[in-house]
Length: 408
Image (cartoon, rainbow, N blue to C red; front, top):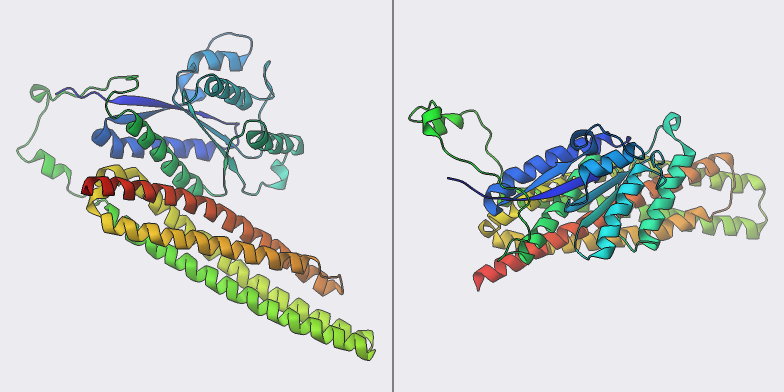
């Protein structure tokens, strides 16, 4: 029997240094179609210049790509890292030109296209850094906020990118479904399937036999349970890091008192040097401990967000199986976001205290720089985690509201 589905086209624009993320988008769209396509009748079609453009002639190569892709796609995904791209006749790079075309559509007609831009914050090998290109990326990032009044999303790892895009695409499609629940906005392509028994060689138990050896997929209840466990692990890591920070702060309070007492008594510089080197030892212990904890924080937070990304993919189909679990997860996520945010605030204050300490001895100066660096690394992780957790809060809030409607 024929089945009609609505196809929403997703165009990805980026320079050539984010190949991994472009590949991940192919997997994410395939996963989305497998979970949402049959249930909601909506599938995504990924458009890439390397696949969907054809040889031809124009003002330049980008002009040929523009004509091949067109401007009728529904979702624009932009990705940048260390390269801005090569200039065209109309913009500083092909990616910028593609963004400009999408933004012009949005500016001319609200909701004509959904634009999402992602910036990769991972480190770049020194041999691959192009300072001029990197500066253009940073300038463009500022323009997204200041010139275009947009909100971009930052990520460091492939896992973070994957989980974020999963949730963002799910939210966009859900919003589309909510807005077009009675009359489809536009059927861009019809996908049909027909059963042709005469052309198939089947066995009486062909469907059952096809399941042999397959791995059972986790349901929404299990995914939420696993994500909640990972959140609990992250919370414990945050508590340990807060304890380490408080411990170091206490030691520095005592050190300050000893230094002041030494100054009042007129003791020689040897005593001050002794105090400074002891402080350096304390800072190095702090750095080593935080280095371990930050890696664990990243691991567990990435796992939690990846699991919630999977929840986003199957939520529309299976949310009614676990209304109570969704409520528990929603409450837990709010506490999780608050804990991370509070930790970031406290850490930022302590980081500034260490930053303002005077330069006393070589070991102390080195340890001080390392402590500031490791705290900056942690602040970056906390910032990313806060952004991701807020995305999950939105997702769980939507599921909770939908469940409440069904109960009425």
